[in-house]
Amino acid sequence: MLAASILVGGCAAHSAKKNARRAELGIGASLAGVLASSLVIAAAPDTKPYSIGVAAGFGGLAVISAIVFGVAFSNIPEPPPPPPPPPDRKPEAWEKTKLAQEAARANDCVRVQQLAAEVQALDAGFYNVVFMRDVAIGHCFDGKN
Image (cartoon, rainbow, N blue to C red):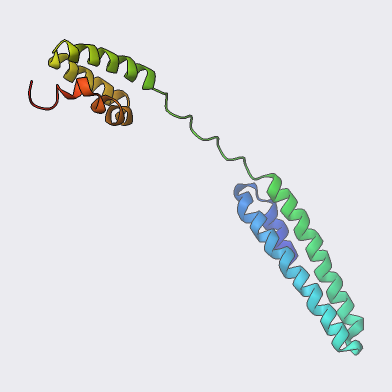
């Protein structure tokens, strides 16, 4: 009965991961059954005639579970590839930073603030680490102009 349920569950393609896990559990349980029936044979040799049949049954179940696992594992779909990284906008942000440096040296703080918004929209990290730490640009943001 257990073998039939594993076979039926292993043939359904809709849940390959679940079926592979069920087959793993079936393999483990059947091998535990083989071990337990072998221990019974060793402990009570008079049960050998029917304990051998039980051990063989568990061994067959292990083989069937291994086949079901192979089928289920081969039907597990590949995970989708990760999304591509966002485009590197640092070169464009650097060009606008250089324009802002020139504007700051010409005391055109209105232009610097326009470029600041553009650089921040392109790359917020670059804006914080490079743009706002520039000495010439900083004069347009210190409130003196």
